[in-house]
Image (cartoon, rainbow, N blue to C red; front, side, top):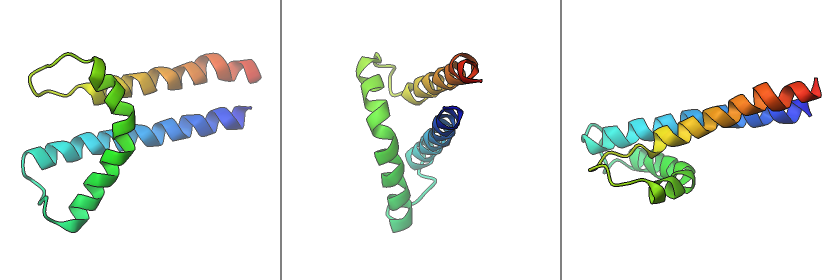
Length: 96
């Protein structure tokens, strides 16, 4: 059971970095730092969007309009942090 918990924690850690990469990429895209017409940049952006949008969409539905500021990645990172901590501090000790 510990192996399953460690695998879930590893998946959460990987998704954490994907969300951060998606947020940084969106800033780079918004400020025109990266070339949106470049095929490689478009592929990376599409991949990050497809990986993060299913988790961010429900959060955005409940968020009020903040005038163009999207804090849904921060909220998702907090949720991932709490789930990770819950698994490591509450669930994992039950199986030791």
